[in-house]
Image: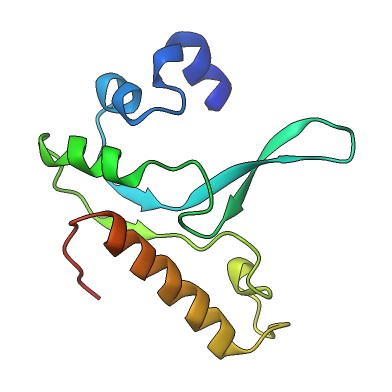
Length: 119
């Protein structure tokens, strides 16, 4: 899908302004990513904890507040979390470490935004 978006709407790539201008948003998945260099020297996006990547949550949420967006907001934990990110039943880290990482992301999101917290 990324290829087709960039081909038909290049202004939509990587900017909240472009996404809101081009698409109708029904829900918001909160996650962050950064560029990492692979073994072959090419860059690829890799998921990371919130605040460590290039996501612009304050900008995006400010723009959403002026739109008709009323959809759900969900946090996604897709960076390495001892297997929890893939739904593993047995983790390579303690459940407490997973909870701590998730809480850190939640706290980071709240500190960067004025979005209301509902657990």
